[in-house]
Amino acid sequence: MLKPSSMHALESAWRVRVSPRWGAVPLDSIRYSDVRAWVTELSMERSATTTIRSYGVLAAVLDVAVRDRRIGENPARGIKLPKKSPKRRVYLTHWQVDALAQQSLHPALIYFTAYTGLRWGEATGLRVEDIDIQRRRAFVQDNAVMVNGEIHFGTPKQHRKRSVPYPDFIERLVHLQMHGKRPEQLLFGEGDTHLPLPNSRDGWFAGCCSQMRQGRLTVSANNASRSPTHSRQPRDQRGREREGRTAHAWARLCRDDSGYLRGPLR
Image (cartoon, rainbow, N blue to C red; front, side, top):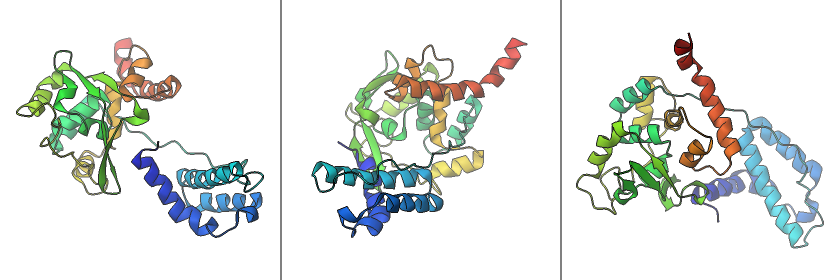
């Protein structure tokens, strides 16, 4: 079952890209060459992500038509798709995390996400009862995601529940978030309402980043991944299913950490 965020992206692709071009075309009139021309045109106007998603929606619809024996084969399959270009990633140092937290409306949330690697929805979905103060661990079992201006409550990515540690130097901040709240109340915020994801253009976090001249909150997972003992450790913290993908991300972090090693090695 698709999550609301995934469903919204697919519905948008159908409504904006696929339906206007193919909605009125009979199934047996769709040709491979026409789909290829559409993909080429789309890739010249839109990003690779948008193109691939729109193509995927059309191809999936035609797959169903094949299974229903409306058409003999899928004319969309076998088309070469554009490749996604890797985005430039910005990783914050410990000093930068501290400075960013001091500028923010929710410093405890900044510190917590920076040093646990939790996604926004996972962190804001935590409840007081999810915190094990003896072991300094947070049990991630819920995810609060904003879709089209509305917060949807569900499971973490890939439906993977997990437990992640947090360092002792933010223990006091965690205790302050728990103070005066019932076990079922939310850890961050007032306790009864999920903190909404700030506007990426003019929200409070964007303002902090503008002052700090840094990137987005998601890059803060670098601090949680420093000096891991095994690729499974950051994989488990981020809730990833494939170790290969985690190791690839870890490799980028290690390259960025080379500057920390030069001094001691000399």
